[in-house]
Image 1 (tube, rainbow, N blue to C red):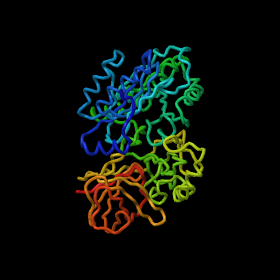
Image 2 (cartoon, rainbow, N blue to C red):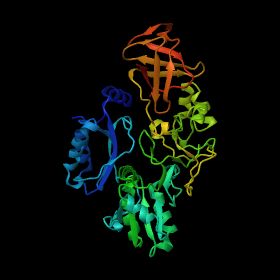
Image 3 (cartoon, rainbow, N blue to C red):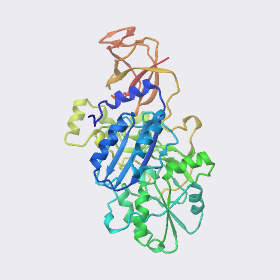
Image 4 (cartoon, rainbow, N blue to C red):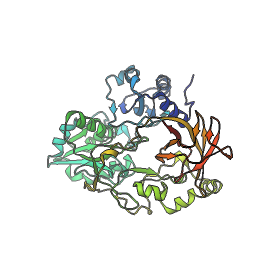
Length: 452
């Protein structure tokens, strides 16, 4: 019985491209009493693996929290797998405004102590005594009430690129940090103010609203379905968006644009920008905001130290990383002395620029006809030469190719000279290792496509 992934992320991405089918990015959560989370986890894996559903899911005795990518043509079948459980009948699925077929490339379902790390002892208060749920227009109306205090229950790197007008945006890195800070900050407003709260998909507010009612707040409200559902209602129902900027999301896209307003700055040069980057240094992976110009100059690095590190021989890099958590185990939350223009906490809703229409999609794919022919294997820094393995079809001198990857982005290049298996060649065939010069660095996750 298969209860684990058998394909790498790279192999899965290739199969998705070859299938050419639209996928939907969505999220959902449900609080419930689950007697055997491990058994529940295994049942879900078997059902979802059969549908080619991918994502990151946490299950616990208290419920389920999921962010997923599902084939569009399997959407109703996927919903049926949820409604097989009584506590998920009629569950709301927060479908993303923008989709990326590569938003998730593995199906990961983990059993946790809690579905959200809130640091609360649920035995000390009634977690079912929640705040009043509000739809987009209702939220807007209460937001305009001068007797309302609105609080962002997300982290600093999320609120920096987008938030509701007038919101309190705590300078925190985790949800559990925000609860005592906000509670202390709002002690004088328990009786007479409306406490209006929001988060990405609603799950943090489900617990937070009950917690704050237990703390003595009389008028507690929460945005139903979070920013994701709010954005959908704004788009489909013509509701005015009081949310300004981009909604940070925890998948490959790293954000969905809600409005064209750019309210953040590149952390390195200060230029208006709201695109997050994970530092290319495998020993760092700092999450920070980086404009296209700095991305090119700094080669996706957060500092000169990291830039120098990625140009060291791989053996030297491995020595420096010895004993450290590296790769996917590193996800630093965007605070570093090297970032001159980083803003945390009380961030203003001030538009610094407007997103261009042609780049409105956060990670818009170049809409061209292409076929996957290979993958990156190495990059020789000093000579600026990239190595690829041809896995499908063939490549000729004069062909235009597209090199694509999470860090590299999408780059078009015309092949004017190449070497196959160590010697110059005009045509590279399946199984050949080829090298050619490139003006940018490639990484092992990059794919090589031939533009048709």
